Length: 351
Image (cartoon, rainbow, N blue to C red; front, side, top):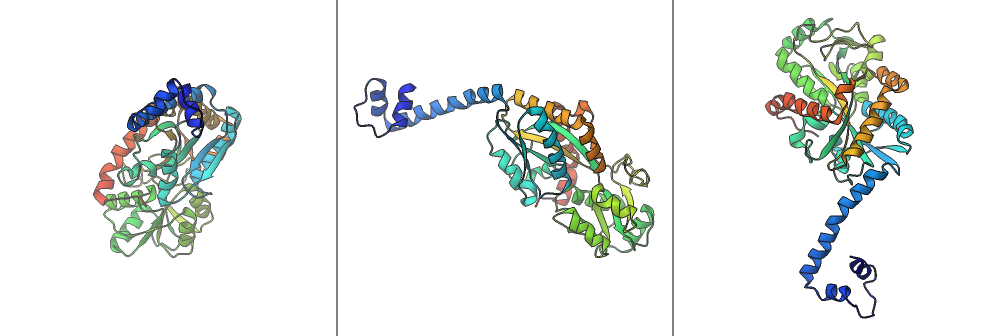
């Protein structure tokens, strides 16, 4: 092996090769390539052992596959701030937006599985598994399930209905005339809107937006009728009387808005849609590195400052027994099985 290294490092040396070097030079070209490939194949295992033993020894990058400012970005930055202290290395958040998150997530798929490039994303990462350029279950290692929040069904303040029953009646009386806004097609808000129409027997036009801010702005301006929004964007406007709230999309009321009923209790039993966030690493990342990242993430989520900041966003942190890599993997698979029928029925594809 030493002879091979010397030969590759100094390919133009003019002195005659000797011993093992001579045999390498005179090998059949194909055999020589196979010999080099075999030597290279042995290196990753050694490298992974080295990474695992010394990890972390340099900065870690958390890829956020959306633009700055959204809930995923805020969660990642709060997580990174605390994980930096816990791991003793800088933790850098890098926004790589585009293609509904596929560009940023795709970058992590191609990253070296050494724990230095990981990503935070949300439900959309698994909802559209069939239409994404990566395999959600087989291309990543689940690290930790972080937090979740419900979607809030809101409407322009001039909407005549004052409760969910009235809203459904109005939509049924005006099929295909109303407009409903939310995130990109294929995202959780879009899936929630289709589920809502299916459960209520209503029809309205869905208007996709690249972000929650422009959607909620158009709702306030009365340019659209309905909105499926995150609590962070919607609740301040609801409290200010700028828009109306008709319900929370999960079975439990939101702690930060206990006065808003759930769709489940308002006449849609079983309606349960939430946006959840998780932390992933590339496939084949060593288990002890996954364990270190998991422990750091759980420790960060347990901190009072992080908990308070996430609570302000309407986020609920998962209990410890659901935060392990194994529990996260099982949860992710269950979510795919839960939504697969809806996705297939409506032919949903990510953007």
